[in-house]
Length: 371
Image 1 (cartoon, rainbow, N blue to C red):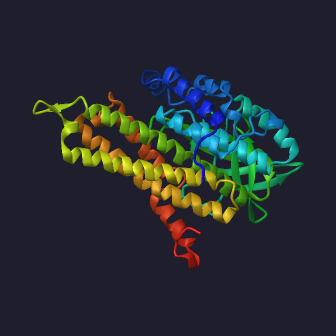
Image 2 (image 1 turned 135 degrees about the horizontal axis):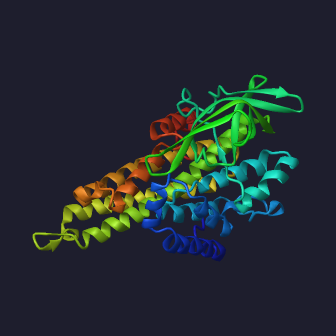
Image 3 (image 1 turned 90 degrees about the vertical axis):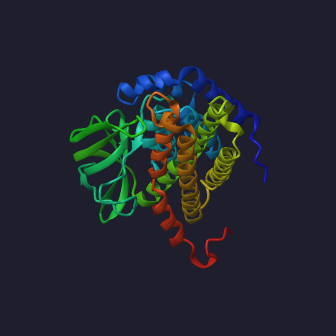
């Protein structure tokens, strides 16, 4: 299999990397954290690069690209630990393009592609514990439309978003709705997340909603799988930068008048970090290449990938802190922020224990061996 990137993909990577290096340095990121964890200006700059239209078809004003391009972009944003929830534009673009009726596509996809509208997935509920079949929010027909009632937790930039993709029970099965933040009955409680980003509790009280699809369970699973693939790619970028920063530190830090990178035991640790990074990278590729596979194959691939990424993230983050010593956990030094990001990504869209259970449930007669 050819794993080389095309010229267009390399140009895309280069454009995003240049923006991260020049337009989203550590000091700007720190300012965004202090301001609440989300910058509409920074999100607008991402949109100006055309990235928010990555999964939006060209007919709807987007770039019409695929999972590999999404992976390339997420890796580079991960290297800069960008706070703005770009992956939500991938989820919104992918879900609306694949499941929404023509009028909903026409109303929302061009706005998602241009960055005018930030549409985020609001699916987590307190009692669900990562399960996608435990939705308790409800929807009711109201005249020519619908209303949604319920509460969703840890919604990315939930108090800043323009609209939400909301799974809710309709006639005994899960359907997916689009609810605008400005709709009546919508209330939000925003807060900072561990990595410095922004999330919110979002409540819906008979809020007017637009039906996206009655196949809500299928759409929700697809949305979460897009999120998992994006999180895997982002984590690879974070780990890649974490390793680079650690190696640079070891090449300058001295003990007993010699740089610590000359100590064999520490060199072995770095080698183990590199091994975990490459394991993670290969599984991120696997996830992205399976993102358009049939649902059962796709779900298994995402669980496998996310489990390995979880193991790698934990190892690389912990070793980086250990190799830095006390400075590795200070707020002033960037490694602590990479570690926080890795910790949060490990629990996003299902933590390692949950994903191990997902793999186990889908083993069947193959005993987990790749087909």
